Length: 541
Image 1 (tube, rainbow, N blue to C red):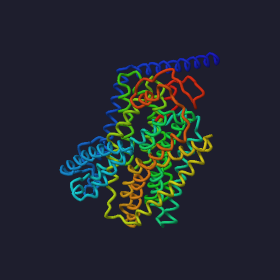
Image 2: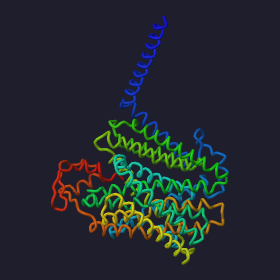
Image 3: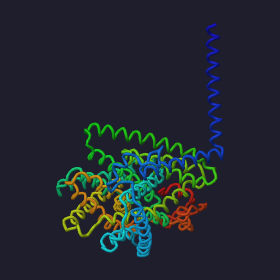
Image 4: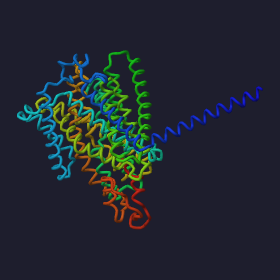
């Protein structure tokens, strides 16, 4: 009887397991249905877009048409979401003309072989320091914050989907060394110099160090793509390594800035703040991985217009996370969610269809190039008022920039030497870590809001923001010039016969890659090589 009872119990458990497996299979089949999958994807896009709008306008989820009490408390402050019609219209037209002027001047600088972002920055400087223009242009601080935060979101998304998991596994040491360790060394050098040489306060030194250390993908990416199209350094994966390092560098500096500002400017006990930030990071990692895994299923690769749906869903999730995180006081978690969601989703998207993620990458690249980069750089330019500057501020900023650049360059040489690179290749790799622009433009204005309630730090905050603007003015054009001139001389040419131009167009415009191409290395060895393999091995940013 006991044996029969055990057998019956075992049969019941087995049947239950089979039913569960069958249920799971049916559920998967339902979710894979084109129409159902598209409907669920559309629901998620609308939901996270709604959350993004709520965060931008400061409204409650269930009562979007009423103004919450905490927003009413901000009514008389500059950061209030409540904007009168005159300010709203003036801000809208100011942003429109800033965008138009920045794009036009940026194009002129492009034809002069200078970074377009340099032209956008110049537009902001002129608007701020020409009295007539300064009186005309007005942008409400709330909408400036929204623009900067969304621009930061685009940076994080491009960092996440630009990381190549397969390459990271193969070259983990080199990528971590160049992306994290060199950034940490430069940050430490700037922090120590600010404290012991220029006698800055410890909080402002830490904040400034993390902001100024970030490298600019806006400068590095086009140059690395150009090197790749010429076959320069591709044999050892230098373009891929440089871009992967830049992505990790940005993630590290942005996260460190967020955590440091939360710890330094909090009024709660230090132990409580540290525990809260650690918990926030862990929760952000968990949610980011889960959200990225969700994007493996919605939308599925064979849904009509899957690339469009993926772009919209990823943008809405990350925007809701970053904007919502800042509004709710969980800034670090929001940033981590955006990066990990993009990274985890990109792992699947790169293998589940023939086009990989070329369309998604191109969409975010265009959004950055044609909208957020011009506005972001012009807004940071408007923070630099020449009437408040003196030689002490300028020389202090230049000194901090110089100290950071020297330590970054030397540490780049040291860590790239561990990757089997020649001295010439080490020089190019180290040079790719020097340009500053996008992260400084996104984070530097936020320093003013951090010290709004601490008057004794406001002079140092002004010096820090000025140093960030000077870093963009000096390192972006100079770094681009050095890379463009030095790379063809220092790197060996693995020339691609017949596909150099087309493979760059494939990566930039999503065309179909070619097959069975030939590479000649140093004029001697000839081998078969496909552009598909090349795209897989090379840059993912």
